[in-house]
Length: 276
Image (cartoon, rainbow, N blue to C red):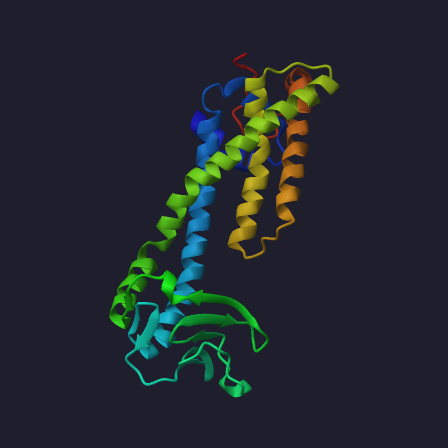
């Protein structure tokens, strides 16, 4: 079945010359369809990872913070709560959120909380060394945060957050990878020129679709295993260019590879019939 052969490209792109040859010669009209499936699988995996990661945090909020949370009212640039000030929310026996008349950090280290809600503004501190960010309530319309209302939002996020993230990320992810593929197509022309070999731009784009596959797969695995690092984006670009060169080289020597009596190395049905 042809679609199964195309899906096999998810792993054959790492090593198989035939995957790049078949993409150039047989993938007319389906290259971006394969790319969409690749990005869809990657996005679903990332969505599941975000859902699991966020739910671990949400669970802590639900079990630890929510039972201690007061009803917070923001109106006319001022904050009021239904508890007597100062009021402190504790996490693991340490102050986490402090409600007070002022947003200044307490002088005593034992009373320090990273987030302080004052009557007129909110401050976020790093340990006990200076203010990182400050919010002025005048910029916020009337708002009431009640524990019951927050609990409803938490329940919604616990159920749908992963799907929401995947839905938002999918078009962005696809557009980003597709634009890279189009650029790689032009880079492929440089490679063909250096090899004194011709491939049309459309075929180079199809080869580029296969060339980005290893990077997308590895990048997804890094994210879901919590091993992603910023330098990977540069490595990803280099990896795609290297595989594109490999794909162009494979197509230049395609006939030698196919007709030299060598067994195909990719698990595809053995055939030498290609659509030019």
